Image (tube, helix red, strand yellow):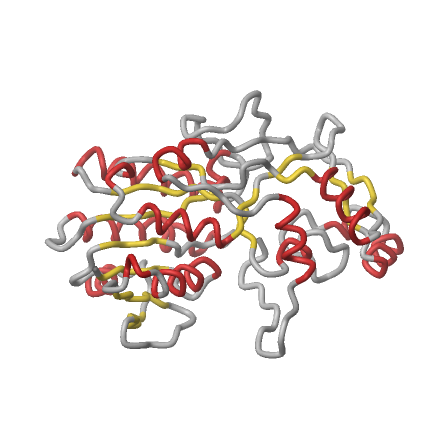
Length: 326
């Protein structure tokens, strides 16, 4: 088994490679990490290929002898690159994979941007049959195109592929910094821009957290997944015959409720909160299909997500680096 991992140096890629190499089920598996701007250490079981997935020759060479692809590489809101890297890059991967004599399975990691995240109202839980509806911007559009392209390669050529659709992925102290009123905020909203500057500075100093409210005035519900749970789902999907042609929502059992977050932090850490109004919409991703077909369940619930983020202590060798803002 030779697994090509794109985006190998990212949050998910690093965790996936480490977990797979430590898993006795995959003791004979080898990794080929396709790296572009960054790189990872080579070992007896990990080799590095260099280049961009937007380049056809790079992709063809990287796929030589590969049995599985775990495709993690993507672009965020970078219009100059997104079509070349995210869309054309996936096309070259699929085009060469479908004609490869060694190819067995293609796993794409998608995102809830493809179904609009919290930008649109959903009257029922979001399942895998919920229609695509990208929110404004090129990133969300690219996530729709990824899912559709993979599905079409399955229809046209019988390619054995599946997509694991993840919401916002957390690790280490990420979740703590999603709630910061300071310049160190991770992702959005950018809370300090939603209140007067003096208030933002005070909230940052006191570690006050935002209680985001949805368009109906209720505490907003937003979907998350911890990287450890996502990696577990990927490992469960490898060579699983029930995954062919399937799309899975891979997320926490319940969305994060900002009201519950504020209450828990007040009770356990004495932190205050401040209401933040918005026109966003609460939603609830349903992960039942992944539980049923992958025999997978997330470990992280709300309390574990919060406690792990607040209790994480960084060493000097582990600086907080955010390659993408969300």
